[in-house]
Image (tube, rainbow, N blue to C red; front, side, top):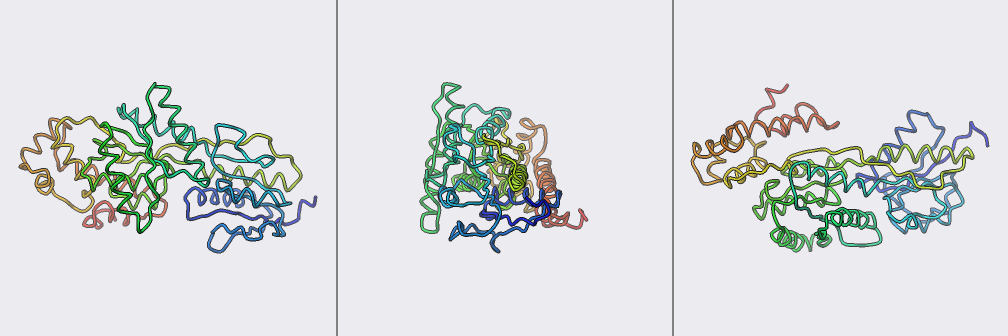
Length: 371
């Protein structure tokens, strides 16, 4: 095969999903670092469209196989295909004859649960999604959670809720609140996605359930947009999605040059955890301190004062300060400042966030002091 020939490679992903977006970013990193001779075919809006894909006159395809419709459509392709998707405990669930690069669903859940154990929690639950063929990755995460809980001889508490849409939103929130109220507390909840974690935080706020004092929450995916839409900063397990993209790109490049792909899936572990306030559980005895910290997490970055926190709790400023010093060794004012500093730090760690953006997010009145 001519090594100088420019190959035409199609990327079949839905980049509105953070996993797909990060996989594409990994493919782009490989493409840029190796200067691979590719012409990349991708829809202008980065949406996956399968119509007549089997007739595409190209050289190779990298696609997300979590959707069975994608696997079925590409089974008719004559060009090399590399599949990307979630891992399976049963090897028989992987597509036959297609090289596969997977995110490790078991390790994603293990890492989330280990974090919740490390902060001192002993009760755990999972917030999942309704079971569909397209959500097989979520069912694998449920199975991993069941296995971990069975190892502790405890039945797994899993709630799927309902799909959210304009007409079902109120029903979904009420269902989440009902489930949250029934859980033994304090509890650590692993959400199968950041989007589900964000919904659960909102439900807790509506129901006046303190996060993380009563319910500590961690998502999966490390979606920066979801994090910025969450009133209490969200902890999340970070996919190794960019590494998955690089591995998939390397595989297709090798296949285009006649190299036989591996017979077993390449399973990529998570890259770590982004720890934020939603899972930073501390055992606090005094209910006024728990309520105050819950309020501070929601409103510290809006410039609240100690008096407003005390009014919310329903005690005097001096009484609340004394309770904070006994429980936490700091004043209410110190707790507000600490949360604002952490919010600013988290903002600066975002690649798309400037120092002014971080200041605005941590306190709209403080921009001039952070320039």
